[in-house]
Image (cartoon, rainbow, N blue to C red; front, side, top):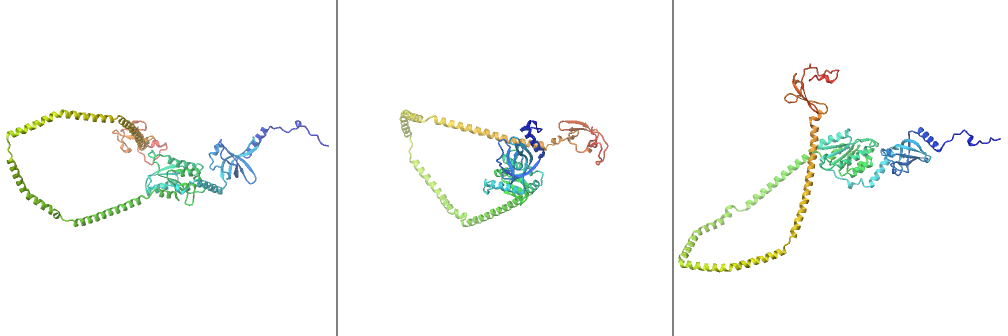
Length: 519
């Protein structure tokens, strides 16, 4: 005999709403799997959503797990998700009540082993090589004698000390260090920003722009050097207008920045040797070239002197060159006396043949006066015709002349003058700005080197009655008036007396009582 089924209203089973069931499941899953590490292959990744979140799935050969990376976490990931990449994801499991699904909220992603890192590195290498970032044709030559070297590395490691020591030994010059972290999640981005920052410096600015950049780091494992395989760093190095030397790791290590750089050095010390020449060798080369030049000049001078002597021997002597002219001169001098005598005799005979009388002079004066009167009568008519001819020529010239060409030249000259004035103002402004920047730099340097900056740290300058600086306690006698200069003002004091104590004695009351009393 079967027991009849009771209606649902008469059972003791609890009733839940859909939302209550979803919340209970969500709480149970999050409590049981609050922190998990899941290994799987990324599937369905299409990049971050427009909201900044990233949605994809982790799968293996039998199962699939939905995954999400929130926008705030995505920007901090050391390794960005890539389709088909095998990773180890760290996060927490939760449910999505809207579709009855469970998913993992990822906090961190790591490649699944060194093999995955190498696969990712090879993929990035192929991608950047296809874009031409590693082509030898785009690599620049290093400057032979740089004035400033920029170094992108950690300021506290041994690498920067080795580089500075090697540059100082070979060719001392100005080194600018851009400090970065050489290991960690942000090391690649910091190095890329450093390379871009050096390129953004302007010529003639307050900080000198480097002529060559060294990106350096010591040796380490693949994970330690992973920041220098960053894609953004490789692109920044390839886009740099300043030649870049890569010195990351040991000689057997290689990174993407080595392939994108203009030159790869086996070690940071080798990078310093490639960046600058040896000053002593340059000086020796210059000395050798100078000696060769002096020898060449001396030999050339000797050859020309010998040629001049040979030509001088082929020329006739001065007596031979002047013999004929001297003979012609002597003959002319002998004939000159006789010629003067004969010329004087002829002039005397001609003068004696002339007969001068007053009526002859009067007749000549009358003829000259008659010719003068005729000329005076024709002069007004000639003058009138001359004036008329000149007037007609002037009218013809005036008809051909116009003021427009002169006006055009005046206007063109005015435009050129205004343009030159503007250029002069711009040039004066630029020069004034450069001098202002140089003055500001000198002022900052003066403030840094001034002893007044030391007073800000609590030190005091002691002067005696004559204004001289007192540097020894033995130079101060009891009752001497002293002037104490602090950072903000000066005060006067009178030296007192205190019993001398041994220098090795340390007062248990603190360092203030070891100094004695000056007031």
